[in-house]
Image (cartoon, rainbow, N blue to C red; front, side, top):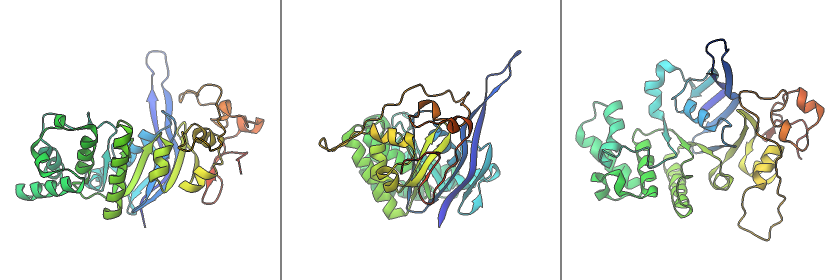
Length: 316
């Protein structure tokens, strides 16, 4: 069963405006559809500014979609219900140094979600719950009374994951959860997340620009470009047989562990268009080596069965 479903999800911002000048519309996310089932990981990838983090904030109920629908367990997600529904969707932020209050002990940080959302739970129950979750993420009992500055980056991210688990959520939104960590620590955090997913049947929305990480954790992938999904499908199909030129370019720039493997490096020419002035037709057309006149006139839609691509001339 799908835990989250999104239909035609959009998020627009009004930018600028003022004396003698009209405000412009920035379309951060446009016409996005996806489904996420329990125990599965949906990865959203793309360059900076493609709308990944905006999508994360909408799913985590930090920002309201401009239009479209978002549902949780079949129930529409409406601002009036955010206070209750937020317990089912929690977020882990990118920066393990900035996401924890330096003035609070770890035990206090972990218990805070329970104090706010479950006021009837007594102090001993909250403390027992916090200590249990602390152990679950691989930290020791003595860490309960320490401050964030006493921990390494990897340990802080374990604490951030523990805080997200305090309300027994069904979905974790992971916004670049390992990009600020050393490579040796990244693998430990990723393995922890995969172990927790298997134990607790969590659904993950995994936001990342690192395709090597996505290959390790994802079940399905959405590739975004200037707010739109340009390719969607199961991870193996997207990585092994990319259909959109943008996806092929991203994959060609990803380092491989096998130096003897043949690799075609695709270098994109031209500059990324401004999200305030997206060109007519396909937004990727100014940088695409396969561009035709049709691409500059019409906006391609996602086509395909399980593996979809928004391209008039996909690579098969």
